[in-house]
Length: 132
Image (cartoon, rainbow, N blue to C red; front, top):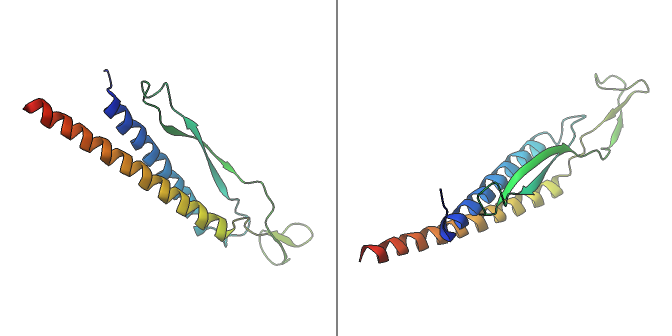
């Protein structure tokens, strides 16, 4: 199927919305587990999708990786996750970073939604012109 410029814009914007929605789910999971001992923050990486969308461009999820940075260490020998010395690794989730990531993902989603809506309006206008 051949895609015109308007449908390519809509495909690219919808791929961006899907990627940012996924990113928001990962951020919300990180926030939900911020107080879970031993939890490692998850990071989303993106990949460009130039050829896979028939020249439309766009973005896809490349993968989800774990942030290997060390969280705080707490001395609690009675905790079930304590190591041989009695220390427990806390989560490495920083609430401020996650909130900033959530805000950025939300804004990126809105920008893609705006692009999608504009392309849909242009497509509708083109169809109206062709009907005349």
